[in-house]
Image 1 (cartoon, rainbow, N blue to C red):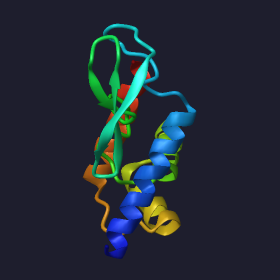
Image 2: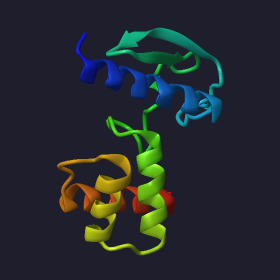
Image 3: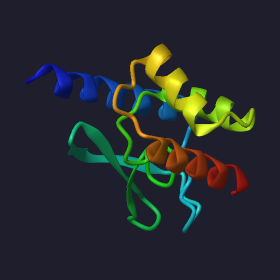
Image 4: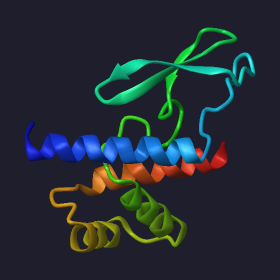
Amino acid sequence: MNLKKEIDVIVTLNFQQRLEILKINSKCLRCNSQIIVKNGKENYVQRYRYKGCGKFFALFTNVVLEKTKWHWDIWIKVLKMTLNNYSLNVMKTVLVNDYGCRGISPKTIFLWKHRLIKAQRI
């Protein structure tokens, strides 16, 4: 396994651990079932199934961090900068200088900001 893949796996496992501690997706929105069984893994992501309705999910399902490979701490920093009305260019500078996010574009940061804003409204 190459280094980038190993880092991706570590970040994914870290996300899963944090979401598990926070009890994310511990209750089904469809049937209110709290009885959950493990149902295999897909790309190192643990899959689960609600016993009540049989719906499959991962801890990442329907959360702002779904389908992301960026570290949790970077998302927290983007959230703080969004709440403090930082400009996209300032946010990019901070992410590149403090977190080594080389090659990140203002468009990506813009999309992250709006993803976070939308999540706050729910």
